[in-house]
Length: 114
Image (cartoon, rainbow, N blue to C red; front, side, top):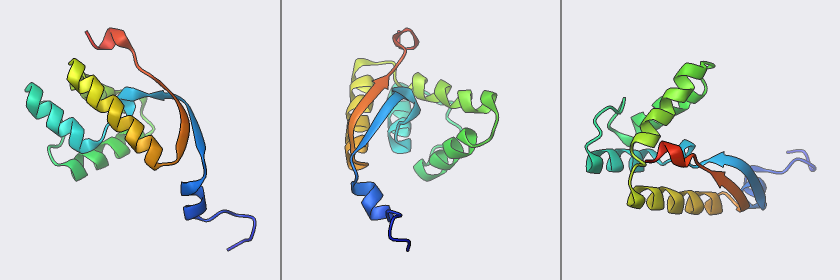
């Protein structure tokens, strides 16, 4: 290891700032599945958390804007209740804290959650 290059543990522990992150772009796959079941949303491409996570990663890395934006149709669909929004926001804060984020500017589009 090069002395001036931090290792993965040092990076994980370092305080971080996250700007302009989309709340509906970082849901846990298991949460999406649970919220979909509770709300009767049956259009998910996968119903197992691991497979759904892979589907989201592949869509995000596909190079296709259309495919990337398709992911938001699913996340927004399960974020249509007060309780769902509260849960997603709380889990977002937990996940960011786990990643060492000390300041985050999280946004969402209220018009997508009527």
